[in-house]
Image (cartoon, rainbow, N blue to C red; front, top):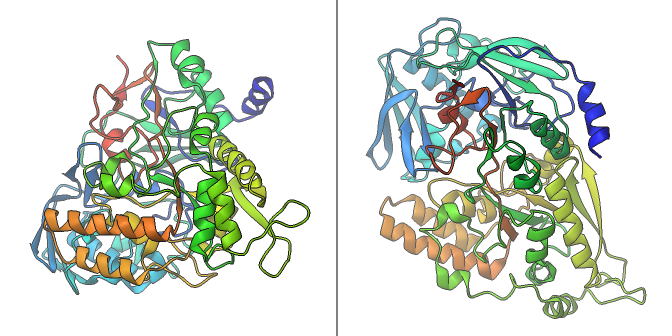
Length: 538
């Protein structure tokens, strides 16, 4: 395997490394398309468009549980329906134009006017944004919405003087970006490699000169590039990482995989029978041997999911009684078979389940080409489901095709990540909110499985209206009870926050010894916290 990968890697164009250049692998793509549109809803913009070229007003640092001021020097809820932010006065766009409140107001007006650009869903609660002078912004809500602070403060801001002339911001590739972030200058762009140089007008001191991005198409290629010492920072699954990576060069090769990533779910498209039946979803869950999935696919880097679908990032919110009071999360093939029988999916003469009409039941489990951990997890799950008579066939897609189909609801079963934030609100909103349900064929940024619960919606509305932590905790417990009862999606395991780094050329990465931020480059907008701390090795 390694010989073949080495040949593939050696075919990629090489550019000599200059001092202060960080080589990063975050996206897994066989070739690059030049797109730096931070408002792109399809996921087609190159990393780090939303967390390196463009910046938000503030960053919620999930590693510390604290907010970090960014383009805003300060911000607050002035009252239940008003957020005020004071902007930094020393910020310029990368073309030298001053950054002002007009840019913030323009950005919000644009995304509120074009719903498809509103990746944070602010149109649900933001009435309008007002620029007061050059460095103060007021966001007016149309109703109290406590979780909205993260959506507001994490919105990437674009320059009004550039974007006001864009006819269709949805299709705009933004090949030569103008941003406020630390790395804005496209120094190289080829199909197999691109490089971003430092913003000449950046408002912070940054020690790194540039970031380089080689195109790699799979986890195996990422592993090889790490072994060859060609990558300084990555956020990928690497099998047996101590043996094959860290122990090969203990002085320089490091990693950190805390369980503060999103929960990974098996999503069943609830618009398609038989997945609209809660008994079928719970049967599928009961048929899955999560311990085997974690061992075979995840190399025991993680642990089987709890019944409420929360990762360790929400440890203070988990209702332990609810989390431990569910049988459909436990591996039990007899129970799974009984639930399938009860739902009318009887075993046919060929040993496979049939629909209630007696038709063969074939299920496609979608996977992402090159995501070796998810591919193996899907293989284990398909075999598990086969043991209870479900004819499940795995099919792999390139990431772009998979993500497009996921958003449009064009799937039956697939693994997927979940929403996260300072509270469990975005998690359950993404899993069960009626307002998050989009018609089939219309792109959705969450709730890909199209499941809406009126009871959950009522709890979410109550949560929105309060900032009291005790009240929010009680509501979160009720959300957990409802999730366990309705099983809208099937929790598998909390995703490790994948992060690998090498210190031969670059230093300053977060780690278990210095957890100032998440190491993983996979969580927007956290990488900004890391980029601005990196420095050439001494």
